[in-house]
Length: 320
Image (cartoon, rainbow, N blue to C red; front, side, top):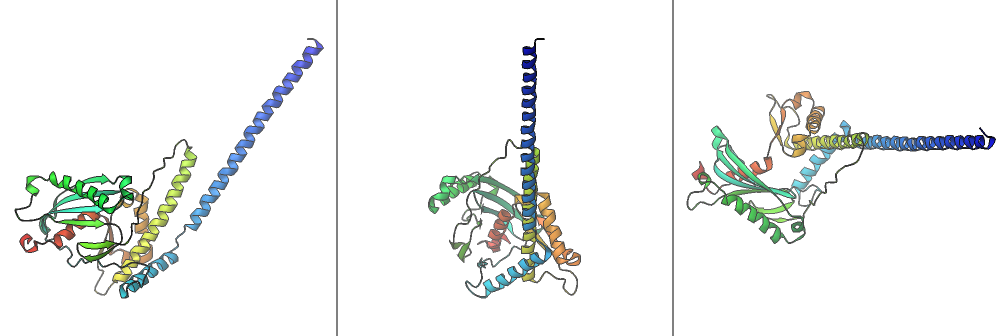
């Protein structure tokens, strides 16, 4: 090999080696940066978890404060930040209700219309069916007339599909219970004034093109929020039990209390329901908690509306 050629080869080798070292250094540097970012991300998650903590003492404070606010709200108009709005529900269902009743459940961006056939204590709910519809986003910003015209149209379509066996006798009107999940100052059992709209739209933002490690962090954050939410919900339940005097055992033995829970979170997120029930045991103690039963009530708000329509029926004597 000639001397010039050898120098060129050595130079090329040195340059190649330097380039390889440079690439390797860049990769290591990027990994170190990535590792540093990941460590910071984990530190943020840990800090978030600590700030979302709900120790037993804090939960009992929440329950006590809620009980005080309920008493204050009942004592005087505007006496509490917690609105204790009169419902005019004078007759609770007894189980003897018979007949076909409708329910309209408006809770947010969707609403459901239900048809429920009741058969008294011996049979209970004979038959139920429903239809669900989404409220077009444009209607949420228009007039209330436009919104309720749309709901009325869907209700009318559902009633029009009513089978012969569900139709009312001549001269008898269909009766409907309305679950309206917004604050209303009621003036009677079937009328009231809306105080304000409280629910808007949520936008589902899909998580795509992310690593499994990143998604696990998202899952961890969801678990932290769900745990905090379920424990605070348990504190709210305790506050209501305290207001009702059912947070301690009474003389003569335990008095059974059934708490009906509705909603997709409680139904489908097992960790949420388990955490809520475990937190109630933590707050009440095992002995008192043994008399408290938490049950999933599917379509509870809709069935409840139908039952109240039945218990306030214009045809109570006829039904019985």
